[in-house]
Length: 356
Image (cartoon, rainbow, N blue to C red):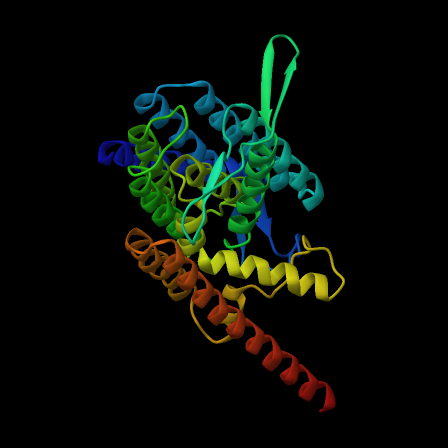
C-alpha cells in the first residue's frame, strides 16, 4: 500500500508540471478580469485542468497494482469522463445544470458496472437492507437491478461529488482533506467489504487516491500554481464516494470525517433556497469564506480543514455507530451556529453601512 501511495504521489507531481503549461497554452485558466465568479478567492490568472494529473496518476498506478475487474474498469471510465467534462468546463465555463446531469449519468454508469449499496449499518445497531426490491429483465441476456440499492448509490455519488467540489475554494484546502479521508477509508476497508474487489485491493486503491492528491497538493497549496478545476473537484468527490461504498464506511466514517464540507454544503443549499435561488447558484457564503472574513489566511484555513479531518478520522476508527452520529451532529451544530452567526453579523454591518 505504501509503495502504491508513493508511486501515485510521484506520478501526480510529475504530471502536474506539464499540465500547468498545457492549461496555459490552451487557455484553460481562471482570470478574474474575464470570468467573474462570486465564490472565487484567488487573484491573477491561474491554470485549471487539475483533474488531468490526478487521473493519470490514478490510472497508471491502479493498472500496476489492482486487477481490472468489470467494476474497476467502470470506476476508471467514470473518472475519465469526469475529467473530460471538467476540461470542457475549464474552457467553456459550463452551466451547473448539464454538469449535474453528467454527474448523474456517470454515477449510473458506475452503478451498472456493479457498484451498489445493498445495505447500510444503522447507528443504533443492526443492518438496514436496501436490496429487497430486485427487478429482472432479459435484454441481450439476463440482467437484474437492485432498484433501491442502485438508486441510493447514484444519489450518494452525485451528492458527494457536488459536496466535495464546493469545498475547494481555498488553495490546498481540498487535496489535503481528500487525501486524509481516503487514507482512513483505506483503513476501514480492512474491516468490511462486499463487492468483487477484495478488502486488500480496496485499501490499495484508497492509498493510490491519497497519493495522487498528496502529489498534487504542493502545486495547489498557497500560492497555488494550478487549480483542481471542476474535473479535479468532482473527481475527488466521486472517488471518495466510491471508496465509502466499497469499504461500507459511508454512513459513519464519511459523515464524520467530512463533517465540515458536508455541513457547509447542506447550509449552502438551505441558504440559497431560502433566498429563492437555485441550489447550484454559486455565492460567497461558504465556511471558508467566513473564515477569510475573520482575517484567517489561506494557509491557515487549509491546514484547519486537514487537522479537523484527521482528528475526526481518528475518532471514526474508535467510535461506534451511535457515538459517530453524536460526534457528527455536534460538529454540524457548531458549524451551523458559526455560519449563521457570521451571516447575521454580516447583514447587520451591511445595514449600518447603508444607514450611514
